[in-house]
Length: 254
Image 1 (cartoon, one colour):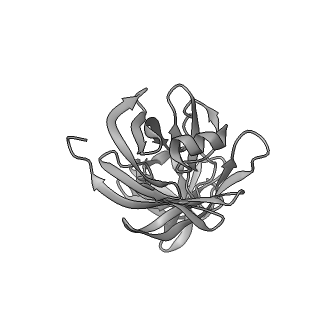
Image 2 (cartoon, one colour):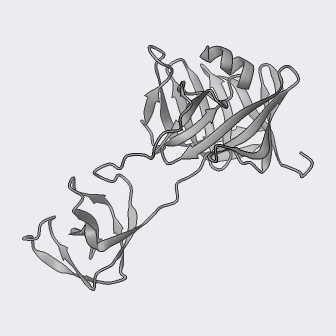
């Protein structure tokens, strides 16, 4: 069923895990951050300590409004690791206000028309400018062989998805996008998909795209996603099966 959908709907363009049509909830926060965060001190005076303990040696203080870089949090999340005078130090997390970092997006640009070349010919992805259930963007897949068919895409902080109305959806990328991130493909025994790179440079007829996310399935099927563009290339066991040929701005007539 999954293979049939790939061939008849997107010709192996957008793939991933086959799931009930039901967008996932927000991602669960981990106990220890693996990326640096920016925070602002919210209390008049915040003590800086050598270790994450109220009894630890006091190294100094920070004034309200001071911005700090948080490298990690303790398992209890009560303490945040910072740098004070170029050395590792800790402050009480409750007196910090965090600035949400902007996550890179790999969603299709709904202001553009995409033209791809595949082993089965040329086809386009055309935005409709309409939403489904408020969170999905409606798109058309168009080719001489299959005609015009509707599909939908969405993105939240847990992943990038492709779906079909009142049907199922696929995970294209599971977030956070980092090397080693993996997820199951299909229901049982179909292996996993995993991110093998987030810095790949991909050359296509439509241009060169840097820092692409590479998603490889156990089957050998590999997809390449560019920031703010989406899929730019797909290979199967090393052979290119889909590549972005042209990317142009959608006109009012489209």
